[in-house]
Amino acid sequence: MSEGHPHEEIRHESSPYAARIRAIEALLLEKGVLTEPEIQDRIAYMEARSPANGARLVARAWVDPEFKERLLSDTKGAAQELGIDASGPVEFVVVENTPAVHNLIVCTLCSCYPRAILGRPPDWYKSFEYRSRAVREPHAVMREFGFEPPEGVEVAVHDSTADIRYMVLPMRPPGTQDMNEEQLAELVTRDSLIGVSVPATQGNNGSALQRLPRSVRRDT
Ligand code: FE
Image (cartoon, rainbow, N blue to C red; front, side, top):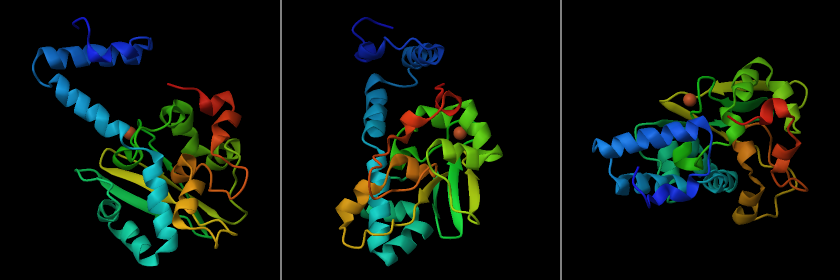
């Protein structure tokens, strides 16, 4: 790659994956498959997405039952209503937590995730440990995130694919009837959109990751 490349600032990443990606990128540029502006556009697109989008969708669904129905039946259309562009060939499915069913999202094969809405997945989501254990022992995994569904609640694990990406619609926490939409959105953590935890009203800022044992937290 040429000197003064715009990605220079991330060269300190020394993992074999990072090196491989840079090599592929260099080849794609060299062969004229992609241009530098196209790569920058794509990075900007991904950087503009974050779990805050998911939180806004969930909070709106909590306060507006008709929006909730649209979110469940036509996720892209509902996202568009809030100015979130999730258009593209990938299908999005929002799965609703209920008093009877708790949903958990995984991609057992690799790292499929609703990136067009939530941005990049956390590193642990891509780890072999999470991908295998989420289906084999979902309760143990959720316990490690500091959460366990109440007795008798069915746990539904959804395996994402290249074509279908899932996002969890958590239940609105009790005691939040006086909160407005914006305040409600602040309760919705990234982890609760994946289903390894649920939104909490007090004392949970979504930092459960720090409590994770090595087995799940190990990055790729
Ligand atoms: Fe995948």
